[in-house]
Length: 285
Image 1 (spheres, rainbow, N blue to C red):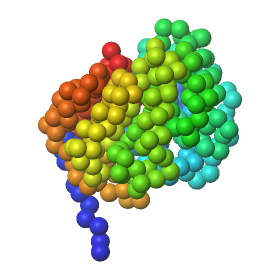
Image 2: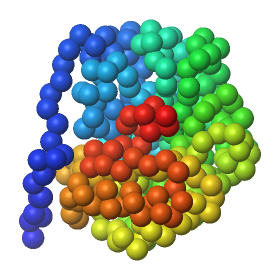
Image 3: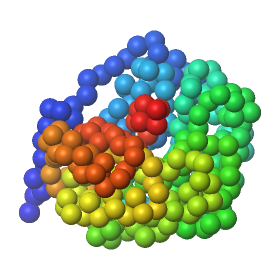
Image 4: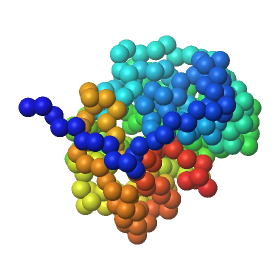
């Protein structure tokens, strides 16, 4: 039976923005040979972020060792790690005059520490070149390796982000190579090792989760001291990815935000087009 494709509602449609600032970002990225999750994950906010002369850098190549059903990032083999990438990113952060830098990566289960040392080197290079820049990292789960997590959270960063993405029940089909419990533990361990950093996680809605499941997540996150939570609408990036079960109305994000706050979440950004690293500086501020 042919699949019925749901039309994108008007509140999820973005206009095309192209300006001198956008061109400057593209030029700096191209000059330094850098990747962004904005581009590789087909983020709907890319044009807006580039126009504001910001981007979320994606390290450790373009290809992921996992194959989550929601994600558009490639997974056809792995790329050689560029040992000069930390310096290149630090220069790009300086040249873009960023005050807040966000670094993420593909998952690299093929590396002994999952790329944790590389994350640490990127953070250190940024802070050495531009000490006043605040740094947020969005990491994979490092297979739950405490030593790998420690490498990252003892670097001079400000926010440690690891996404739960979806509910415990839906992990089995949407994020089958990851674990809900392991992701919670990554966030718990990060805060335990370095209580001075903010911990953060992001979720998608529209995959078939229930309000009760989301409430349970909020309660679990409060228990482990997670400071920041973002929620946005899942938008199917390609026909190969998981279908959208339903599109949430804008007011539903407001309702969920009130629930999260009532449970004890300190910082929230819930909106149809919210993404884990979208407007990260504003959320943290």
